[in-house]
Image (cartoon, rainbow, N blue to C red):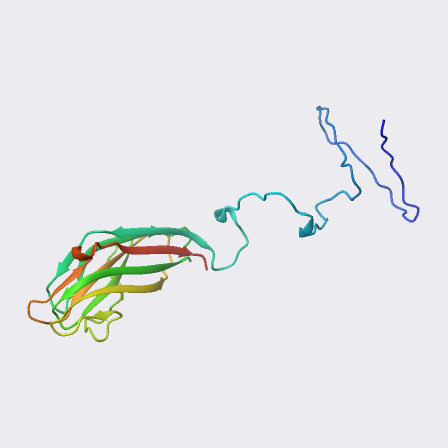
Length: 215
């Protein structure tokens, strides 16, 4: 039979007390078959002593992390097509996406990946609008209806051209109400010009990705 030996330290003067918890259950503590020290909440453990599979980490449960933590990601996919022939006027495309922030001071990073086709017209633009709750829309990108000054332009004279728009926009709604984003399209002034958003001849898959970022 192996034995358990408790041995004092000749250099120490303190008293080590082993106390039992308040329990009515019999329990067995099995000591490891190896040399070492018992760890406490004040102990340090080298990473080289860790082995085996670690549990999966859920990012939503992390605390004490500063700005930049991703809180949620939502996506809006548009597979239809809309068109406008009204020159120098932004028109709704019907593509919207909604995200509700979880913190008042969060920012929203909007990724824009859209495509379409322009037939005629002196130029075209894509605009981005935002609406908080049930309020009114505010244009965030494409604020100038002049094709040469807006954030995304395409087309030239009466030529026909397919287009693709890729853009990022960092928004700061500063509240937890539902935030809705929508795209608008614009065509410059030209006889019989048409601006297609998600033109059906190109199997459109237009995306709007909204990411809530903690600050």
